[in-house]
Image 1 (cartoon, helix red, strand yellow):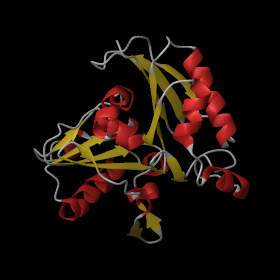
Image 2: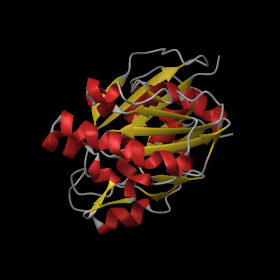
Image 3: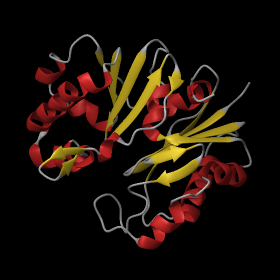
Amino acid sequence: MVRTLAIDCGGTDLKASVLDLSGALLAEVVRVPTPYPLPPARFLEELATLSAALPAADRATVGMPGMIRHGVVVQTPHYVTESGPRSAVVAEFVRQWEGFAIAAAVSRRLGIPALVLNDAEVHGAGVVSGRGVELVLTLGTGLGCALFDAGRLAPHLELSQAPVGSGLIYDTYVGDEELHRLGPAVWSRRVHRMFVGLRPVFVWDRLYVGGGNARSLTPAILANLGPDIEIVPNTAGIVGGVRAWEFSA
């Protein structure tokens, strides 16, 4: 039986478990706050610590914020900061992260094959059907995005950095900080406006909405999402660790 270590790395916390090929958990999810500062060397040690608290695995899937191409970090938003999301960016951390061969480094540190993707892509692997164009948006510290076409993962789009207007980008427009500042009702209307605006851009067959803050969407907004939009559990970020190997093949 192939066992997959799945690690969901967010701006706020790190979560991990080991799953069988059906996606069933073989251990309780281990969760720790995301430590800062977090250059690559410390990140790898945090993953090793999480792994040590869980049963042995045959392979690892890591989902992390930012743009990851072919196992290499193009850019990551939170881990280059001094003390976490919205804090000052540290130039040295930017230098260390950009171009870092994260998949190879994780594989060496854990001693097993490793797949490293954007965290929304792993989340999406846990929920998509493999039919048609499927968009996954995750609402958390910021906005995550993953696009699948007929069960194949498309090149990553860092939608979170797209401008919305008034100096805002999607990452701040619907991010965790705005949820707490505006409250669920106003924030939920913002999220709904985002869905309306993105529909003609992607013309999706299905939109999946996940992430920890999806549960803050108000009943009034949920009732008006339409049949092609589905709210999915945040646990998909772990469960997707198994299916990610299939969708990224």
